[in-house]
Image (tube, rainbow, N blue to C red):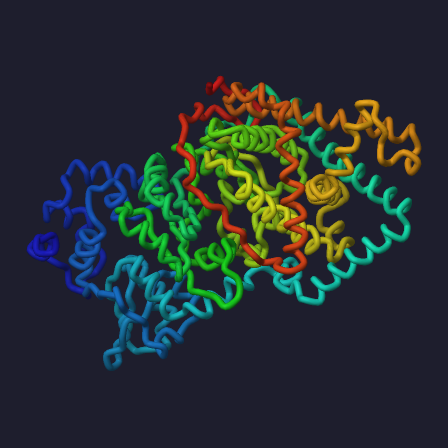
Amino acid sequence: MAEQRLLRSGAASPITGAGQRKPLGFYLVDAGIITPKQLRQALYLQARQNAPLGEILVGESWATRDDILVALGAQYGLQIADLQDFTPPADLSAMRSVDFWLAHNVIPWMRVGPILLIATSRPDRFETIRAQLESFAPTILPVLAAPEQIDRAIARRFARPLAQAAETRAPAAQSCRNWAMNSRSASIALALVALAGFAIFPVVGLATLFWAAVGTLALFLVLRIAGLFTYLGARGPNAEQADTRPERLPCVSILVPLHKEREIAGALIRRLQRLTYPKALLDVILVLEEHDDVTRAALADVELPSWIRTLEVPASDGVTTKPRAMNYALDFCRGEILGVWDAEDAPVPDQIEVVVRHFAQAPEDVVCLQGVLDYYNPRTNWRSRCFTIEYNGWFRVILPGIARLGLVVPLGGTTFFFRRDKLIELGGWDAHNVTEDADLGVRLTRAGYRTEIVDTATYEEANFRAWPWVKQRSRWLKGFMITYLVHMRSPLRLLCDLGVWRFFGVQAFFLGTVGQFLLAPALWSFWLASAGMPHPFQGVIAPEILRACVYLFLTAEAANIIVGALGVTAGGRRFLIPWVPTMSLYYPLGVIAAYKALWELAVNPFFWDKTQHGQASEETLPEPTFRGGLHPASDGS
């Protein structure tokens, strides 16, 4: 019906000059699709948004994509090509690389004698395309197609090379994909030698165990205290709150990797619809695996808004991981800024505005912003309360302090935003690393870039069941082990890239985190000494050192309590303060997770132990008053 109205309004011929061509909005008004008032409002918005008029009209739900496509056809006198089940001819698509077709969102449709027809969704930019293809045909003409159809056609033609590239995108020297079997065998052999040495020389073994446990505790404690004092020193008015906005708001792409998400699909769409950023500038991509019939079926029952699309990642004989899926989707993104959310995430509504403003005022070397991760179900049970305390302490206190100190910021897996061109420059994610986020944080710092903490929060589901918690934590710890081993292949090169201070930060975070869990039983023995009971290391370690270590251990516990209390206060969750002292009972499950991770590191390093979401209901969220981890929020109880 809309097409008939537009055709009656009078279509321009393909050879009509731009000066004679009526503006797109006039065709839509003449056809009765939009009102003159809506056109004026759309033009007002276009002056402030880096988006074409058609996208603004679709984003405001004043027109459909089909309406815009038909109007463009009438405006330019172009044929509309149906690419629904179309695969580009191999000889035509080989004229240029897949990077060319993706960058310009065009694809060859067919050749008719001397005429080459190219499908595009932006005829206003076609002269650039024509100039780069003129050597392949005497006459090159555009036909119109929806951008999503063009993406799918490109994916059908280039699925295999794109999938292979997604697995090897990160630089080999900073990737774990060459973690060969002999490396794993060497790790197992080293562990067996260590056990044998411990049995033969028990005194030396106990001393080594003692100093390793104390050393990793001290490393991580120094990191936490440094972050804590930096946090405390930065309290007060924050100069970073200046309301700096770009002249025209940019397009922002968001990747949401999904895998077998039966329960979460509907809730995810409802949460994304709360976003207040202009919909014409939102490009949300739900990334599915080709074989994932579960998520596909769940999404089939949900009507997706115009600014949300799906992208299927071709199956692989190698790895099937979240970073591989994101690498594949990276080239299909349209935004200048790219962010990542998880399936269960509930970002605060103004999150994108905050990110765009922060990037507008940040120096050029700030290529990544990490938001705060919090949980929307802290009252589910004791474990969810402790998980919330842990995350509030880390993301609202320690991590902002680490970032202000200029140390490497291990990214959080979700709610981080990149300047997309810099992410491509870095080689995207390591497709084989099961903590691709922390690895990327190290790689961007090695390249001379920085991460800052942005004053916005995303709420997700706390993993409150014991065994799923162990599985999730073991994946994180295995990834930390892999990331550390990969970047420490050449310690001197890492030291040169990072400098002494950041190099120390890497040691403190990765060795401290992994060591605390692996060597926790040795640390627990200090509770015996603090209670006046015999200590296992008596006779091996001097009594004065043991007494000093008791004080070190108590200092660590006190620091954990302070950080936890400050974190839940900043997060508007003061009702959790009475639970903070119980955190010492929360971490023992991490020991099981650490040894599970160590075993998988040797036998199955790329195995992705998926966390099942959708098991808890969403509670009332506190007011989003977080500002860079520096200002306490009101009580959310």
